[in-house]
Image (cartoon, rainbow, N blue to C red):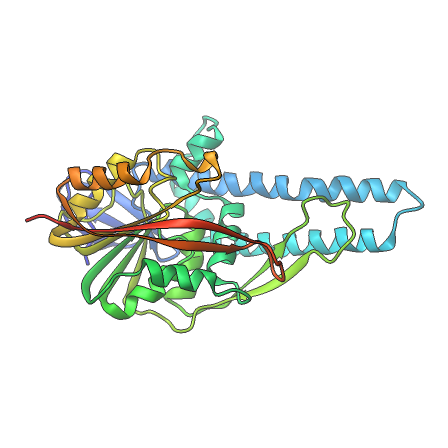
Length: 356
């Protein structure tokens, strides 16, 4: 599939290390094999790089403080010090992976003027999606080897039947992509986070194995073995999947480009749910289908961020869709490796067909 200009919807053509629109002259970079098709690529690239460095400092600050405190004490427990050291080393390895993923992006930075203003954390979320911590969390939940929860959820979310082109908005760690790829001619994965898109692309498209450490030390004063190594990998390469860095509210594809458009656990984290449904309607062909999955925690008011289930269904129908399925299923989440406690929520899956 050919990507489209965000300004005029004309087809984009590959020009060296960029995608260019011959109609209006705009260009977007291709970094590390990923097209960066966002409204302001320069701001995006710099914010992504700078945010990773900020998060690195945040990650290591507790260990530095605890280490200094331990040195000052003569009665420190050796097991406690070893636990702190192991957690710090594991965190360091995780950020080495982040640095490797960001290397192509940082090599491209000199070609783009640096932003001088300082953005708030909420603005960074809207501009460049998840940072390192969110990336670790998504990858571990999607690909960890000690739980099949992510696989079950992906299968529950997947499309029913064959499809020509499927579009996944907010593709995250990529587990859903591996489930739907065998049913499709082509799968386009849209993810705003460069880190997540890079890692997902490596696992799904290239068949790579990513070593990531799960550091579960809420307090560095704890005395325990708190580090688990996870070898994150898929079962097989999916050669019909393509990743692009883009905003789910402004997808760089022409109208009616997809047979299926999927938004899995995205509706309640985007700034504007109505705008998301608008974009899904634009992207799906007449007679095509959309899938929306979202969580509702009836015992946790914090999860009721935007809409109740009946409001979501009414909104989809108001946008010219015919409801075909609205089903509930359990959404289990293993708290940590070896844990006995499981968080269970309710997942709503809505399938609707765009009216002709």
